[in-house]
Image 1 (cartoon, rainbow, N blue to C red):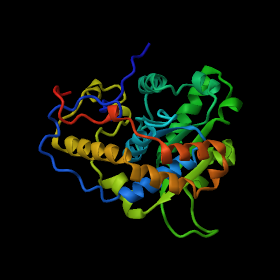
Image 2 (image 1 turned 90 degrees about the vertical axis):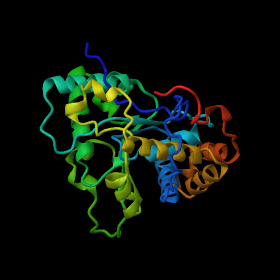
Image 3 (image 1 turned 135 degrees about the vertical axis):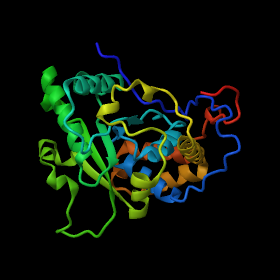
Amino acid sequence: MTTPNLPYRWNLIRPDPLGTLLDGRPEPDLPYLDDLVECGAKVLARSGDGDVHFVGRSADSVFDLLSSTLSATSRPDRVRLLPFSYRFEEPPRPHEIRQLRANLHAMGVSPHVLARRRRPIVFADLVHRGYTFTHFYELLRDWIDDEHEAWEVIRLKLRFLGITERGKTSPKTWRWWQDCAWTAELPRSAVTNVSVDRFFWFYLGDHQKKLTLSFRPTRWADETVARPRHDEKTLDALTEAVAVVERGRTPEVRAALARLMAREPSFAEPWLRSLTLELRHGTPSRRHHVRRGSRGTR
């Protein structure tokens, strides 16, 4: 059996003590907080009451905001991170594929589990041409075939949600999924999008400092990724992530999420109306606040 190997990331919801890591660091500005809230609201509303797995690290801030907000609801585990990066690299070698499968299995994403889950599983990521989604889908599809699990059952539970750069819409507008032949193997409703402001999209995808390294094939088995990093860029990213989590707990952000979700067509569905009510009237739990000054440093 191959041992799973996953990047280390501080748990900011049921937090690891941060000790003195952030002492003396100024609070970040969070210039795109409104865009972040809007994106998070649409991702939730378009998830079909599924479990959202943010692929890679581009949308980490969306995860941080939603995981913080949902921690005080009846759906605290509906958003998760799925470390995976693969765009232009050479095809993974057999040992890398074995490692990837072990990693995905440890995250609850395996053919056996997919065939037996009740709710949809939603893979969300920033999308330009759809290369990461294409590689991920092909690797997952091969694994399903190798395990002889029921594809006709699994295909009805898969969703792909692209966070795209907002542009002009017209019948001639190019859409990423139109060039991805594999999307035809899924129900049309299984592929959806959330469009965001282009500057926000480029901030998340190209400019924002991240808590983890890109988890490409050459790092899938690299044990060094499982150790915390304390360099300045990582600490800057951690400072921003903590600030996003803290803002996600506020009544203002919860109310804004609820208001935006109520504008979505899916608000007619009972699960979303129920979640919106929880966000409007629930009380965040104080015991989960990030401990920036506690002893011990990880």
